[in-house]
Image (cartoon, rainbow, N blue to C red; front, side):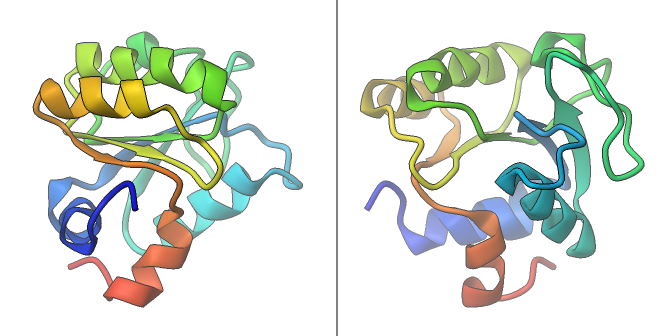
Length: 138
């Protein structure tokens, strides 16, 4: 396990409502598209982060975390594991409170760095699965 249920619950229910979803584009066939929709349904503001910076689910997109002109609470990462560590480092630099690596996204060194920086970290799990399992965010 890369995160205990209490950490997952804390992120979903208390860390904050603004989630930057790295890898979210308008491509409906990608997992990020559906997960972002679930996050919105449960009251989260979704901020698409993708090189195309296109709007998704009615929200303005940005090319990088550094381009987002307001604070984000959670950075949800839908990129390959070999790129995920760099995104986690950007999340720390951007002042995020938590980083969430999606199913199949694993970088143990990045996880350790992120936690050492004081952020909550979840790896190889999906909030769309965890929300119904651990209860709705308040």
